[in-house]
Amino acid sequence: MECMGKKIEKTFFGQPKALFTLFQTELWERFSYYGMRAILIYYLYASVTAPNAGLGLPKTQAMAIVSIYGALVYLSGIIGGWFADRILGASQTIFIGGILITLGHIVLAIPFGLTSLFISLFLIILGTGMLKSNISNMVGHLYAADDPRRDTGFNIFVVGINIGSLLAPIVVGTVGESINYHLGFSLAAIGMIFALFVYWFGRMKQFPELGNKPSNPLSQEEKQSLLVKLGVALVIILIAGFFVYRLNPSNFVNNIINILSWAGIVIPFIYFATMFTSNKVSSTERKQLLAYFPLFLSSIVFWLVEEQSSTVIAVWGETRSNLNPTILGVTIHIDPSWYQLLNPLFIVILTPAFVWLWNKLGNCQPSAISKFGLGLLLTGISYLIMAVPGILYGTHGRVSFMWLVVMFAVQMSGELLISPVGLSVSTRLAPFAFQSQMVALWFLADSTSQAVNALITPSFNKGTEVAFFGILGFICIGIGVVLFLVKKPILNLMRND
Image (cartoon, rainbow, N blue to C red; front, side, top):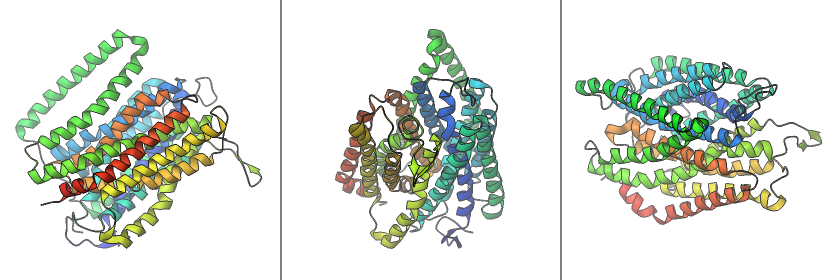
């Protein structure tokens, strides 16, 4: 197999054979991630005296923890991208990240309360940051910048993500909620072990040289100063944590959440500014980064809504939907975690239609800006739909689960216009010296959105339901309209001339 613009053997849906290995690796990594996330919030606020005991935290704090965990997962992409670009190369960074994720799930499977929770989250956060951005970057390197198969390849890759996400709530969610949360976390660990095996053997056979070397390696002097800087940073973090605890021990967790939330909001913009002003970025690359910025901002708004599926929508599903509906005369029971499969289910169902459409249109398909704008319009409509049952029936009873089904169908149509396109644009517009880190920047949009969610989701309750969904819905629609209005100047900046 040859890459980077040369002829590549077509063996996997007309795509490079290596895509299949990366597809499977991401499938099982996402199975572990979304399986754990499907039951995490319920584990956090389930009573410690319940037959399937949880940690007994307040729902507001549980939503904030899940949000800040998601923010840090994607924020850690900075570390993963930096390690790949400066020290290890993408390939080795991916494998080490997978090992850390596996250890994290194993620790969470051990019932040691908050101690195992925070150790586990730390390992998963660091490991996912090392794996997630780099595996997407590897997919980008299977194609030349102008290869028309590029967007289709990323669409297929996203299908792998969503197959794993689809299986996770069914398997991990059912076992975790119906039997034991820690047994569910064990299944997530097994999924990650599968991912490691697939990646290791696939890499050895199909792409042993791809991503083996850093694109911008550290000099010897930089290596020597790195350990000193890391040591100083660790001391500062420990001292800061000690003082935050001493100031208000009873509110320590909430204070840490607030600090991390603001860090998650500010750091991505500092990161972008650092990349934009680097002397390793050419004037043409700087123009393309400028074109990328409005897409980055708009994706933050999209992910703000999409990522609430594990917090706001999870709580709404458990407390506001009918969990024992009668379908065709038969009453069934729905585990709340099952709602998490609606997101990937609609992605898997709708992706073939979008792939067919983009292949049919070829070079006549809408620009990335137009796709983003339409995607945000659909995302906004999906949340306006969620405001309707509260308006029609009030917010204190239970309503049909079909409101969630329709919401996810509309919202996932929007995601298919944003997520794979954003990944593709990130690799296409990446400066040479920041190839992996540019994809990490794309995932930082998700980090920022979840950092914001950590601050705003605790305000969601039955009394604020209609306003919460309505305000976010109209914000998405408004930004979608703005993207259409500024499309032409952004496209001019994207041109490589």
